[in-house]
Image 1 (tube, rainbow, N blue to C red):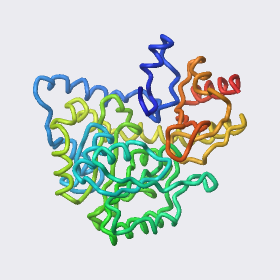
Image 2: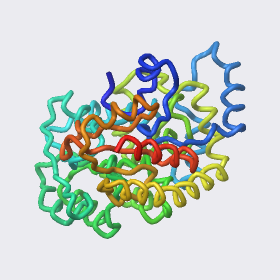
Image 3: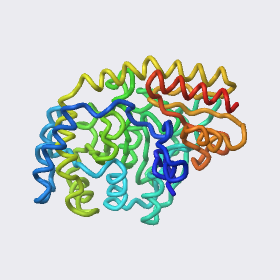
Image 4: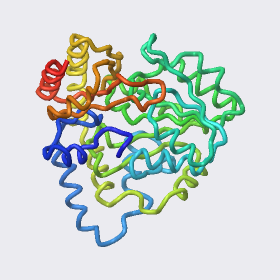
Length: 349
């Protein structure tokens, strides 16, 4: 069993065919040929260990983001780095939003951390408000934010993000910002804290190739921070050789392919409003998200099961803190796939 979307293997085991998978927020495009060829070429290196420090990949990421390579640690997807951060920092107290990605809390509680939740409100579209600032105190060791948030798809106002960062710095709180979906926003530069890395030692940013680059199966993520001691501790908090030679080669090639990323953004900009309007027309309450997925409420009993019988997977969000039964998440896919999804939803509803 999995607490996340994308469990296509269980579906195929039950129904004997691949699903139309709206449960995983990944690119609907095929892997670009250059990235696929780079991974294939790396098969010649499988007889030796991969570079444990990911030197070539970190050099490429350094140039891509305009930061020192020493500020970059690569891992086996963002989830690997979340668990490494918890193990390296071992905070006593932490704050997360609710709802948000469950692996923050899962990783923290492994080390006995006391995790508090800042509840997000449907009335304002599940946006983070200034009410979070008083919750950041000198007693708080770590704050996790997901920008844009999963599963709501909402970003935090940039001015408020900077106020949160300043407040964390004043309180000695580490701010970990998950920007794994940032590349899929309409204007990624307007919502990232990358430019703040040089000024704030208490800032750590998580990124991944999973969502925007179509490398979910190869597992490749990285974290950015000027705190060299923290990155070194994170590197020691998990097994060595976390990133395969294939993933490193694919990551380098993906960074050179900007056209595929631009095409994916265009698709999301065109199809996300269409999917939101279609779900609303079917009587769903749709959260006004900004990423490549939509959170919606539909109270019909056993909706995921009824869709699965027609070949469609969606993400049941009832296990997110702050949500409950009737809340679901659907990815934004191609025009044809979105049309088929809405057609099947209409039949079910």
